[in-house]
Length: 175
Image (cartoon, rainbow, N blue to C red):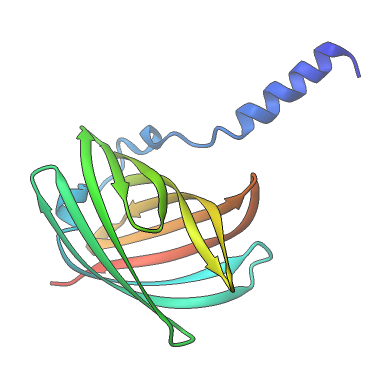
């Protein structure tokens, strides 16, 4: 393969991995303000699908969320369709306008988030227990605020750059 062709293919592959920039949604409404939306109690319903589309797990989440200044806490309690439960507590910090960082016990390092318009992109690595093993799985999490306080969430899960599946969630803030 000629060198120029190899360079072109490499460039095309790398730019194809870049994805959508969250700023694309700057003009979209309703505007998502994390400090307002994730404040109070929320309910969420979701599912995990393998890469072939098979639903392997459904779940409900109750989230108690609060903010003080630029710091937020999201206490998530999951109940899965098989009866198992899980809890994740996010500690989130607004680092600049539209920029957030988060930590949770099962998150490796720091989660990074960016909000623009009605969208949030949240990128992190999660320790995912499967049987007796724990895998580090990369999440590319996109949330979109809709009318009537509905927040849609789609997360793509990858390991070593390979797509494992996706998580879909719908959030509704309690009145």
